[in-house]
Length: 161
Image: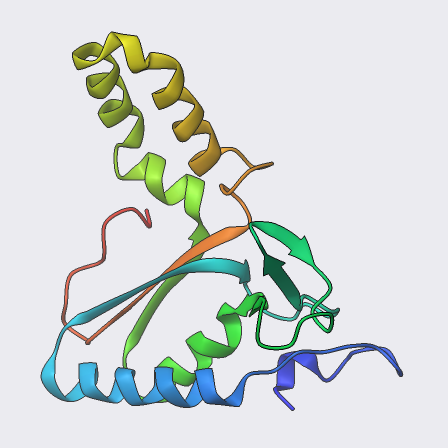
């Protein structure tokens, strides 16, 4: 069991994905040996979260994960803390995770949305809605996280300041 999950209450639910940790470790070893960067963006938590995040989606709606085996898409929140630990154990630098909204704003999404709105004023509402969906805390802005893994000596990735 990962160390950051060992304090779960008796009978509590923890989720662990050894295959994801193994994959990230292998990718990080490659970055260590060959140089480069990896950017991970997904919904999840920075680590240490307890509870059940298993979800199913069927026909673009939430569904019971056990109702239609093989017919629904299954997913669970990413434990970015566990993935960061796997990467660090391979000798690379990890930046983040940070909330997606914060990262996109730091990269200049507001300026880009403004430029798009000026060039397509009839789509201003659509652009504003997309901006909100990507950055607002009650939309994708907090739930989705961004983490960078880089070889040592590579520059600090943009958006993490």
